[in-house]
Each structure stands twice: as C-alpha cells, then as structure tokens.
Image 1 (cartoon, rainbow, N blue to C red):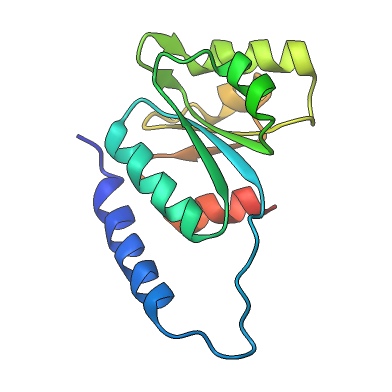
Image 2: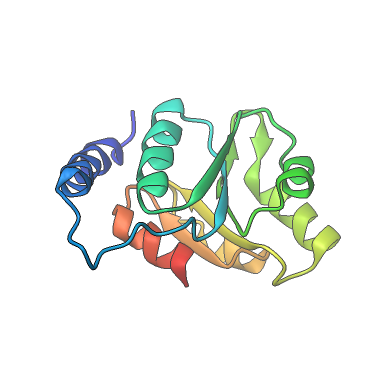
Length: 146
C-alpha cells in the first residue's frame, strides 16, 4: 500500500541493533528532545514512526485518524506536529489552515506529508516543512531537530 514501509522497517532494524550494543562509559542516555504529535491515518506508518522517533529520544503522541487535531494540540502542547495531508475523512490542509489562523505562525512546527507532490500548497497554507512519501527516516529526523 505504501512505499515508505520497507526502507523505514530496515532502518528501524538497524537502529534497534545499534541501541542494543553496550554503551561506552562516555555515552549518556539522552532525555526526550521534543514532544511530537503524529496525525497519520495508516496504522503501520504510525507504528513505525512511533518506534523510530522514540528510539531517537522524542516523546511521541499518536492520534487516531478521526481525532480532533486542534484540540489535541491544545491538550498535549507538542513542539511539532507531523501530519498527513489526507487523514481519512479529514483534510490535513484544512486542519493546518485552522491551526495557523487560531495560533498564528511559529508557535508550533508543522511538518506535512503526502504521497502527492503538494509541497507548494502546504507551504502556502502555513506548513514549516513538507516530506513527500516515500521518505527516508533521516530526512524526517533532520526536519524535526531543526
């Protein structure tokens, strides 16, 4: 169904293997960097992203596809929102516009994603970044760490 799954699965396996190796004395466990809110309707993608982001030290909250994303933002107070353009019956574009009208730009980092090249539209509506599926996990991580 999605082209993202194989590369993400493979990278997670590599990262799990890296994390299972003994830590050297000078390495310390990192505290969570940021709270990330995931608004994605594909359960496999949600599972893979949660695993990857938690392994990288992020605090991750995943929403159901029919969740009220603006209410979740107010409740969870995330540092970043990773949102699919198509969320089941909802439009990620409309949610993005609502968030920007309500909260203004710059308060919340929003990374939009889609299998379609709608980057210009997402950026025009207020996204901070866009990732086209399939994407490499390191591309997502570098966007979230900026």
